[in-house]
Length: 216
Length: 216
DNA sequence: TTGACAACATACCCGGTAGTATGTTCCTCT
DNA sequence: AGAGGAACATACTACCGGGTATGTTGTCAA
Picture (tube, rainbow over the protein chains, first blue to last red):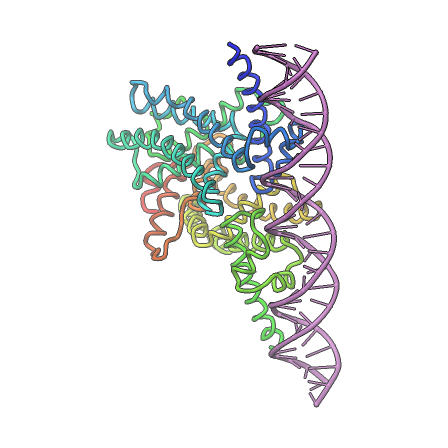
């Protein structure tokens, strides 16, 4: 009791920091974001952030991890469901895209995290952390890869390279990350419409027949 | 004569700098790239760069502009051709994707330039330059937009929002920018195969019938 | 009551980087 | 020949930002 009572506010404090950090990292990018920026965004000072995270990189990695966790939480229940492969593919792609829109700042950090790994300019320790996080991302992508290959086996999807197609699919589904700017009065209907168009585009790209796409 | 004889080597020097800068900006991103990095990549020092460009931002903008110029040069002849809308769409998308792969470092700078504009963290003068460059990019995109809308009118393409669809199409065609790493022995056949898969994915996404896509 | 610790804020250090000011070399034109 | 300038290199400054060391306040347990 005393534990959860003390841990919960702490958790709340942490998440508040993560939210602010994700927002700043999205707004200016990792390199161009200073810890003071994040602190200002919080109405606090460096002290608060460095009390919870050992370095700027650590903070960034925490945002990355949180973003991936959100994705797993959204997709896992669908992936386990015993339903037709087409329905599963539609549900997963649409859900993923909605998650991208709803947790945009975190997902932008995931994106930049992947890029940070590709460009190798980090310390060995940071690299280790990034590699582990990247494994999370790969595991997540592989959930989709399995479904894709199953769909190909069943003659529903048509493509050459699994890797390239996976990239293409995610690029389409993730694209709102880069051009969608939530204005003040952004209602659920609009968001659903955007996610729908992205999903339709991706499913078509995968070679699904039009009648299998209709109502996403 | 004396003019071209003196200007040409100068131009050569400039392009060498642009190449190195584009490479560095791609490798580490704009903010994380120092002028010294670019100079080291050139086997030179800051002096050489600041002799030709007034600031880091100026250098970056020059790369951006050069990248867009390459795109226009590749697409313009196709856009003016009097051919069927399907053939035009196929030729333009494929050519664009090939350009992305072949001028990758420059195009990554174009991409980051767009992001730099969206996140507003620049001085007013830099912002003016970015806005002008962004107009170049918009003009370029509008060439495709016209073809897209024509294709929709003719019942060849099917989509809701022009803007969103344009984003989706470019995300697919541009995607090699982010996952393609040219290894030492990268032959033309491989590159063409990659561009082909991206183009097919995009054209399908636009709702083109399968028989109109076959041989891209 | 008090002391111990969490959760911050404040003040400071120091390395890296954009930009500048000043050489140095070579080339060209007269 | 030599004067002038283009094309760099060298040396320096000023500042920003990551990280740390230390102070302050509230809270809870004994």
